[in-house]
Amino acid sequence: MATHPYIPNSVPAVRAAMLREVGAASTEDFFADIPAALRMQAPLNLPAPHLSEARLKRHVDGLLRKNQHCGAHLSFLGGGCYQHHVPAVCDEINGRSEFATAYAGEPYDDHGRFQALFEYCSMMGALLEMDVVNVPVYDGLQAAATAVRMASRHTGRRRVVVAGNINPDKLSMMRNYGRADLDFDIAPFDPATGLLDKTGLAALLGQDTAALYLDVPSFLGTIDDGAALAAAAHAAGALFVVGVDPLSLGVLATPASYGADIVCGDIQPLGMHMNYGGGQGGFIASHDDPAIVMQYPSRLFGIVPTSVPGEYGFGDVAYSRTSFDKRENGNEFVGTAAALWGITAGVFLALMGPQGMGELATGIAQRTAYAKQRMARIPGLRITHGGSCHFREFVVNFDGAGLPVAAINAALLKQGMFGGHDLSADFPVLGQSALYAFSEVHTQEDIDLLCATLEKAIQQ
Image (cartoon, rainbow, N blue to C red; front, side):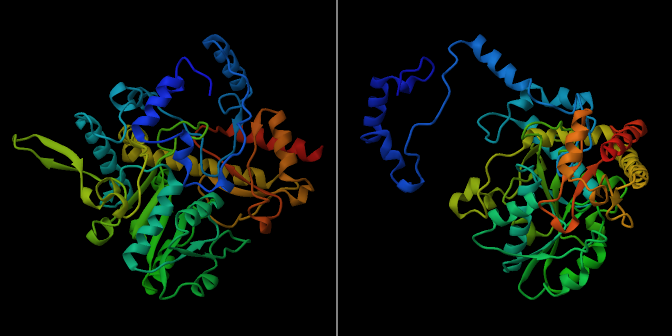
């Protein structure tokens, strides 16, 4: 290894001293437990280094210029990460040094962060009509995977029934996260309606079922009958776990109101920009049932009075249940928290208030309805689940146009638009279909322009 000016342990004498200190003959000793078949046997094929900051900056700028982003393109792409307006105050607050630099540990007094996260949890609890909300985990996919594991620990059962109209990435995360102690059954959905097949579901629910997992709205944008599904889950002695888009609660009933035991989701729509792999944060919520609360692996913040009258403190609740305290004996290992995004979401919720959330969700529902009506008039297109209710997203089928989704999206991109999320590989039963998403940033003119561009693409 060559000596590097910014890496002290690349100096041979320093490396030798460090190895002597830990009793290792070489750095190879640190990897002895990894089977040889899993270890790389040749050096990485890395490009030549950039030897100055100016050259490195030029190189990175060149890479960034290749990106085509939603600031320059009109986007109708959703499927788990969405373009929404981010109020300037959200960026102003989350950019403050006391928040941007606050990580997971407490080597310093950090009561401001604790209070900010407590306020976020309180507002999320009010939105969800739940008593307990965690400090955000990495993203909504992890939150869903953790929620079904919580249900398994609570019930002592290992089988989870998952609605088939789920985000495939979320299902993959669940399977990966629960591969050691969970079994998964996929409840079929009706391709004609996008809704869960209740007959098929009934055949899967049994006395070994830990949880029924459902997204409302579903990945396909449809809205299932949550009350009936909650009753079915509870009749089998299982918990009803619901993934929810928090923005949708401005117009839809809360999962708690129709029987959900655990609610989870992603807070990205609450004041976070889309970016390349970030901007996600997962929430988990429940009623104040101690048996369920003790299954949370992530941090919970509470408020308590101090010895000074009128002053309060903020900090961890039931810390002893976490892996921070119990280490390998904890419910699950918990790592990086999305605390900064929780603070950002708290700012967003405080800014919007109940009336603002209602107005925002109503506007999204109206745009979704208009887009469905407008796109249904395009020859060669079909709104796959046109008879179902939708929020923000719906499936558009292109079989009648005789074109694959990839060709349609390529034609749209040439006109400065990102088309819908291609479903043809993950949901072949839906044919050549794409998932189109609409939000408050889209105007009627934007939707009309999309439809006109689609018509031209099909005619060509």
